[in-house]
Amino acid sequence: EVQLVESGGGLVQPGGSLKLSCAASGFTFSGSAMHWVRQASGKGLEWVGRIRSKANSYATAYAASVKGRFTISRDDSKNTAYLQMNSLKTEDTAVYYCTRQGGSYGDFDYWGQGTLVTVSS
Amino acid sequence: SYVLTQPPSVSVAPGQTARITCGGNNIGSKSVHWYQQKPGQAPVLVVYDDSDRPSGIPERFSGSNSGNTATLTISRVEAGDEADYYCQVWDSSSDHPYVFGTGTKVTVL
Image (cartoon, rainbow over all chains, first blue to last red; front, side, top):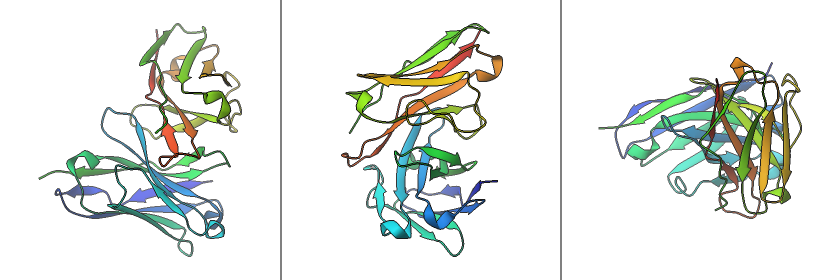
């Protein structure tokens, strides 16, 4: 059974940092591209960024709204993906989901349960 | 970046058919994916690559894509289908390559 479990969310002040983790199991993590998607309360889904596999040079890409502030990494030995968030803003407040890219055309076939990040003073 | 537009809401009686549209410029040239999200839960993929269904998704869920509109069709709607639905595409030429639609709330009357 595929499982994605996020952790690391919490309350942080504007300008602060937080690092989210996504522990994966039930599939070949090292061969999968992993993404982060967020959702502010009562709002729609927003893609945050992704990291490809080692075979694809661990290439990363980010949404314009987080580029330069957020960094995605992975540790294939631990089957874990990470989202390092720096210079946090109040508008970054959201539930953050870890997702697995399923196919070649960018679908997200498995999702974690999400972790809440609140940026507030 | 690429924009996907969905109607905010769709209402349907049980047993009837719900159609949710997703509009985008020449969306027919892209692969469209659809997600169902119930309150307090993570999204679930219900259709991928325009019209394929993941295992475990009922045949009542189907998709089509042509021109400037993709459509998710839910046949024989059940109370349990009440949820938010999002379309999504991969725009390989964009600096924001993964785009979600605005979302549609499906209400079962």
